[in-house]
Image (cartoon, rainbow, N blue to C red; front, side, top):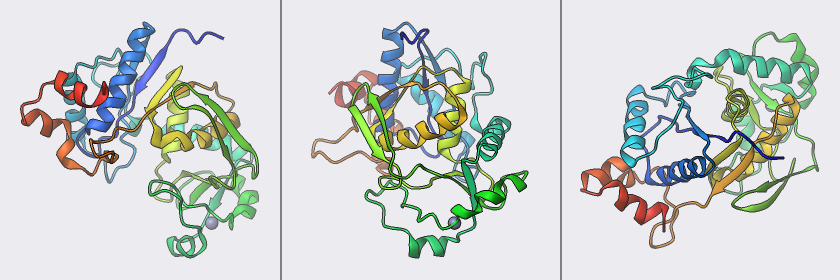
Length: 282
Ligand SMILES: [Zn+2]
């Protein structure tokens, strides 16, 4: 089935200055939208009220523009699927939460941080969520009695043993086993903030995104999101996970390397072509 019209998205979080690793991913997303004569949506993923800052949101728009990336819909220019700030889309996430609750897909988890620290297996990778032991699964019968998600963590009940597979347009065929490679993941946090997984699935569907371009560190998260997409009865986008940018020594560029924010490279006198030649087009 041809996926037309092409709709891609740039989805930065305004929790710091735009890093060169993210910039490369956004550049690739921009190129793919151009090649397919599609539209590109800028979505401000400012869900986390503690970490998101309006100044960073403004800086990220300026930095993307400096790099030469252009988008057709976004928080700065509006569009048919506004608002393009996650902090203003809460009602849509609540609707998804209700649907998951009514479908028997999620349960309230009252484990404390301490419970989880002692019970959970250590995550395999630094950026991975520890495997939840499923202690609160029996509370699924209580789920329908709750009208709002507040005060507890809500977890998605994964189908243990099922392999969740997808064909990644860059990384090739992927498969992750539910209950082994990832456990019951959080869809709504106890501080009443929707989790990343739920928000992106709801937004990508609402904004009719046909292809998701993002970093390879999110490949496994895609398996979680595919379970949410299935539970919510939403269309499945195509996935293109970009290779992670590494420096000359082969070390992955993480966001914490402040020296490699676009602002710093720009202050050092580099122009956008230099940055792209050094990283995105290497
Ligand atoms: Zn629990």
